Each structure stands twice: as C-alpha cells, then as structure tokens.
Amino acid sequence: METYNVLVVDDDKEIRDAIEIYLKNEGIQVIKAADGLEALEKLHEETVHLIILDVMMPRLDGINATFKIREKENIPIIILSAKSEDTDKILGLQVGADDYVTKPFNPMELVARVKSQLRRYVKLGTYQGKQGIIDLNGLTLDREAKEVTVNGEVVKLTPTEYKIVELLMTNAGKVFSIREIYERVWNEPGYNAENTVAVHIRKIREKIEINPKNPRYLKVVWGIGYKMEK
Amino acid sequence: METYNVLVVDDDKEIRDAIEIYLKNEGIQVIKAADGLEALEKLHEETVHLIILDVMMPRLDGINATFKIREKENIPIIILSAKSEDTDKILGLQVGADDYVTKPFNPMELVARVKSQLRRYVKLGTYQGKQGIIDLNGLTLDREAKEVTVNGEVVKLTPTEYKIVELLMTNAGKVFSIREIYERVWNEPGYNAENTVAVHIRKIREKIEINPKNPRYLKVVWGIGYKMEK
DNA sequence: TCCAATTCTTAAAACTTTCTTAAACTTTTA
DNA sequence: TAAAAGTTTAAGAAAGTTTTAAGAATTGGA
Image (tube, rainbow over all chains, first blue to last red; front, side, top):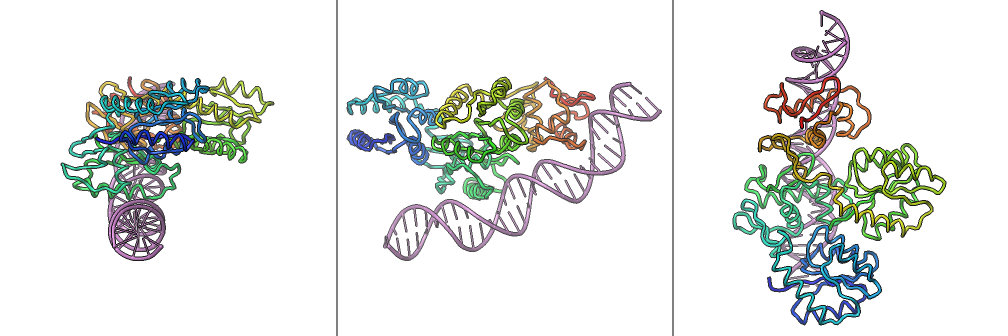
C-alpha cells in the first residue's frame, strides 16, 4: 500500500483545509467531514487509514464519534481538543483514541503524529484481521483492492454486492439477518420487507458459486439469515 | 457503522416524537412503542440497545414492563416518571431499571443519560448475552453461527428448534414447563394446550439424540417440563 | 448536458422448508 | 388399572427463500 487516506473531521473549515495542506504535502490523501455523523458516513464509504477528530462538533461530537467508530474499526484516531476541554480529552482516550493534540497546535507536530501512528498501525497490522486478504476455502477478499476471487479468478461484483460479501466474509461464520445486512450495507435504519437483499444474494451466488442452487460459500440459515461458510 | 437502537415507550405521541428528534440528532436510531405490550413486541422483533420507558401507560405500565423485560433481557432501561409518581420511580429501580428521569425533563439531560448508559453497557459487553460456545458433554451451541453440533457434527435445526435448544442450553439443568417454553420461544402469552411444543421436542431429539426414545441430553421431568442435561 | 450502460429496486410467482393440528399411541403415576 | 402426562405420525397450512423480469435510478463517457 502506497498512499494513506486520512479522514479530517472538524466543524471549522479553515482548520480542515489547513490540515489538508500539510498532509497533502507529505503525500497523504485527505478526506474531510464537518461533524461526527458525516465522519461515520465517510468511513462507511471510503477506505480510511487514520482519523483526526475534533472534540467540539455539532450533531455528533468527537468523543461519541470515537466511541462509535471503536465498535467496529480499529484504525488510529487522533483527537484534537482545545485546552479547556481537558475532561473530554481524557474521556476520548478512555474511549479508544490513540493520541491527542491540543489546540492551538503546530501543524508539523500533527503531521508527525499522524505519520507515527500510520507507521505503527501498518506495522502491527492493527486492523486485526480486517486488513490483508481473507481466504475461505478458495474464496478470497482483498479489502484494499476491493476485490474478490474464486479459485484465483477475479469476480466482478457491483458495489452493493461487494459490500455484502465484505460484511459476510469479515465475519465469516456469523449469521446476519436480512434486516441486519440491509442496515449495515445500506447504512439506513428501517427495512420494509422488500426483497432487494434477496436479489443481491442471488446475484452474488451467481458470481461466486459453482452451483448457485446448492451454494458452498454463501449459505442461508432458514428463518434467520445468511452467513458465509468459514 | 454500528448504530444504537433505542426503544422509546410512551403513550404520548408528542413526547415520543420529541425524544426521537433529540436522539436522532445524536445519531441514535429510535424505535417507538405506545405502551408496555407493544414494547415487548418490538423488543422481540428488533435489536434494541436501550429502553426509555414511561411509567403511566395503558395496557402494561412501565413498572410491570420493566419487570417483564428483566426476566429475559439485561439491556439498560431508563424510566420516565412524573414528579408525583415518586413511589413508582423507586419501585422501578428496585425492579431493575438503570436510571430514571422525572418529567418534565430537559431533553439534553435525557440524551446525556442515554449516552452514558450506552457507553457503560457496551463496555461491559452486557448485551451480547453470553458469548462463545456452550459445550454440554459433546452437545455444543454456537450462538454466533446459530449452530448446534453433536460430537463435532453440525445438526441442522429449524429456527424454532434452534430457539428451544438455545433456551434450554443457556439454562442447562433448569426445568422449563411447556407453557414457559412456549411463551419464551414464541413470545406469546397463552398456551392453549396445543401440542406444538411436544412436536418440536420430538424433532429436536430426533436430531440431537443417538436414541431419541431414551434421550441423553433433552430430558423430560415428569409433570413439570423439559430440561437440558448439564 | 445528454445518452448509454450498468446497477438497483420492486413485484409477483414458483418453490422449499417449517409449523401446527389432531388423533392415536405409550409410559408413568396414584 | 384408570387417569394423566408424554410421544409419535402425517398431512395441510403457513412462512420464508429463490428466481425472474421489468422499470427506476445512477453512473460514466461523449
């Protein structure tokens, strides 16, 4: 992997842009969000290697955003906080942030910390199995390349299909209800008994299974949901 | 991203909607119910991480709802009560609520309490129930994969069969009456002396027992009910 | 911007599995 | 041994899954 994507989350556009300039200068890609909720969305849409999170933000603040992110992901989080928000800083670290920087900060210092975190993160493979290639009996998932292969051959999946496969493969063996699949892949709450998940499942099977009628990988668990065979 | 689902139970639509707005603003999903009974249904249908329960409600009030919920679930419950209902408040906490808020309340305070409960609750991992695999003399239950094995071989159970086995295995040794099994698995109150539980028991034995006529795991306790041998 | 291609959603029908019911049968208890 | 409790069977009803196809929405390129 050559380039890193850093998600910069701050409600102050000036700060976002300033950080962007410094990071880009080091060859680091920048994705921006103005608050916690937007950050969660971005995280859902794009590959992110590190997050810089301001504490004080509308809608969803940095502490709660950290908390939410940590439920699923283990990527490094650097919290930005003003001096006065000491309590939040502590809370943030407790909740799972990896580092913090107090405002006002020296941009060079922030960049250094970012690079340090990225270094450690890649070395340790902190992604905890979520990184690298997952291989389940000949079905492989490369999360970086967003690529799925069956017996070495690349399978061409649509974005939604890929997301479903990614969800199931990174949690191989675990059963997901149709509602759960819908909520996690579409990132939307309700599910009105429509049929779209089933249709996608069928399409996926058509592509990854030798015999879609008798699937080897993507199995149904009657009355409960679907799972990827471990 | 994992979002939290909060079940808001109040017979006053205005209050439900108001709470919803504030919670959604924090990125929290809201499920609504108008009374205790409806709440129990929702609880059974959907994944709920926290419940906000009004005390005064038709059909099934908050205190009794708390009591019922606590028989099965351990998710956090915040009780809403009017000032005058002080006794109920105390009762509610005794019965198993985690926090209470008196009406009229500051929505921001409620939100803060919700978030605090969610944080603690997830940290303690209280909600996944018992993780991992239960093993009873060669009979195993994997709750994540929704899978049961006997001597290493996977047993294909139907959803209802699985739920019965899960109930009995997670409470191994405890005897459940047919009525209890029915109520907990089907989540319906009455049981009109039908025979369906017995039929399911038979099917389960056929699948998990070497000799269904002389069961080793799923035993009958005459005149009382069934239990899974510890 | 508009067009063409791809992808997603919806709906209905076919299909499969599971659940319920009722009646007959067996075992246990008093 | 009669009554009560538990077991078994089979078939129709109910519920859940799969498949197809067509139209809607989105995307990428001219």
